[in-house]
Length: 211
Image: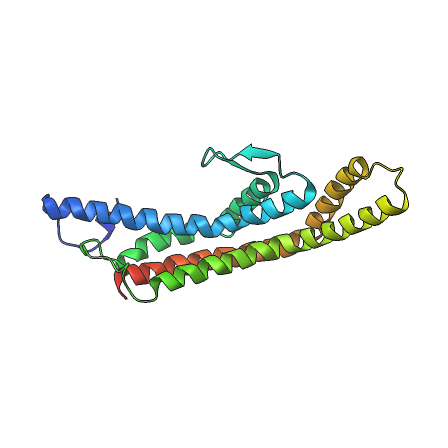
């Protein structure tokens, strides 16, 4: 359907036409993979939180991939998708798909994967995504670390208490309290992650198109 909205000459069905189809599939899969990896920072943050909460052994099935994912990671990822719809991010993605043909024309067979700086840009984008993941998880992880320290002190001063039985629900309650208190800040950080994703997709299209 995108073909009918673009100002290009009709294609002849030949060997080059098949190569153009393969090229479009590769570009789409590559851009989608990069965007998904950037968004996976949310699940990484959830995994860090789960580890401190004691949910590291409890996973749920991700309906998108069919693989297991951390509980808090799936929770935050679902919220992030709802925020993406709320901020009209799906419209921006559709606009990006349409305007991507300005950077990588449909009739252009060559790709700019070999452009200098492309690999470095992808690595920096991943690093920025992981920094955002750490920013999402850091308040909860730091608070739970202090809870662990307090429980350790209690275990030394009052060894008759079963700290494992007492500490597990305490850490869960504290983690959810921190998540609720910092929910507004978490939304802002997730919005920054969306901005990073859109910038990465746009700049990658420029690299691919050789712009």
